[in-house]
Image (cartoon, rainbow, N blue to C red):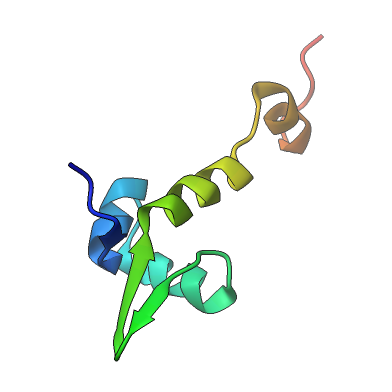
Amino acid sequence: MTSLLLRPTEAAEQLGIGRTKIYELMSAGALAYVKIGVLRRIPYAALEKFVAEHETTTESASHDSDAPAAL
């Protein structure tokens, strides 16, 4: 069973990124968190929302690329 709230290290593990990046995302307001005293916890739903908001399709990813277009 997945926890409702994750520690930053656990959230980083779930997203496959570093703990420092999680703190950067929280500070920038890009990743929601819950503050419990001095502790910060990330709701699992916030991870799902973050991924959904940053998901790209193959078509949109190819338009963002610096690679030359295929002929």
